[in-house]
Image (cartoon, rainbow, N blue to C red; front, side, top):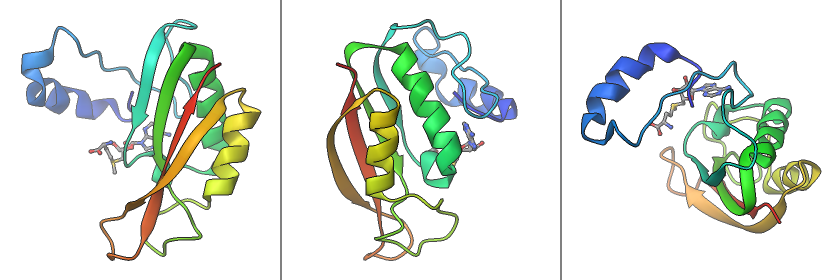
Length: 132
Ligand SMILES: C[S@@+](CC[C@H](N)C(=O)[O-])C[C@H]1O[C@@H](n2cnc3c(N)ncnc32)[C@H](O)[C@@H]1O
């Protein structure tokens, strides 16, 4: 899922040996178009949600709840303003993310700090959740 479809040719080349199992889909910025309800076992995102504003993250979490199967799991890498001054991070904390996960109808499993690539003591957060 990507906002800028101009990346797709590069990604197609980069992952050419996995063409049969990868599909590139253009999002309008907060949706998962064409992904059927309850069809996905695992959702993962790295280095994208760190930039997304709270409203957009909330919309994506509703979409993720829609497409996840019961028992499916999500892992999202996002900003945590309590732990970092790294640039280009959205105004989200682990507590805000927990609230957004629950508001979307998902169940929080755990949250873990992860290092940023900015300074060794700046940290983002990984939030893990499931759909009961
Ligand atoms: C820092 S890059 C990380 C890309 C990739 N996840 C990686 O780790 O190499 C952030 C990506 O998020 C995409 N992006 C920005 N806003 C988005 C949105 N609302 N929905 C989906 N993708 C978005 C950008 O086009 C860019 O490709």
